[in-house]
Length: 244
Image (cartoon, rainbow, N blue to C red; front, side, top):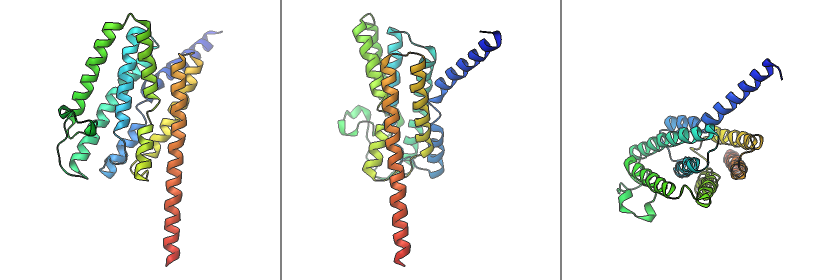
C-alpha cells in the first residue's frame, strides 16, 4: 500500500471516528429546534433521556473493566452532556407551559408513580448523580470480576437498544406524532445503520452489534407510526372537505 493510500485510509478512519463521537448527539438538534419553535416539549419523550443517560453511564463503567475503542468512550461522554441539555430544555418548557396541575413532584419524595416526571431540573440531577455514585461504587468493588464487567456491558447495550422505545410508546399512547421531529428519527435511523455497519467492520463485541440492529428496527416502527398518522390526518381532511 502506497503513502497516498495510507493517508486516505487514515483520513477515512479519522472521519469515521469523529462521526462516531459526535453523531450520537446530532439527532437532538432538530428536536431541540422544533421544541423551541413550538415552545413546547410535549411531543418528545423525556424517557429517551433516561435511557441514554443510563446506558452511557453503564458503558463508561464498562470501559474501566474492559477497554474498548476510545471513540465509543468519547461518544458516551458527548451523549451524556447532550441529554443533560435536552432535559433542562424540556423541564423549563414544561414549567413555562404546564398542561396539568402545579403539584410539585420531587425525587426525594421517592414516589414510584412520579419517577422521571419531577418538577425541577435539580430533581433529575439528583437522580443521575445517585445513579453515578451507585454504579461507580459497584464498579470499583467488582472491577476484577469478569462476570460483573461483562454484565455491565450487556446491560448497557440492552438499555441502549431500547433508546427509541419510549418515543414509540408515547406516540402510540397519544395517537399522534405531533411535536416529534421526523428529522430526529431519520438521523436515529442513519446513525444506527452506520453504527451497526461500523461494529461489523471493526469486529466490535457482539453486544454492540445486537444493540445497533434492535435500534434500527425500532426506528423503522416509528417511521411507520409517522406515516400512518399522516395518512389518517389526510383522510380526515379529505372527508371534512367532501362534507361541504
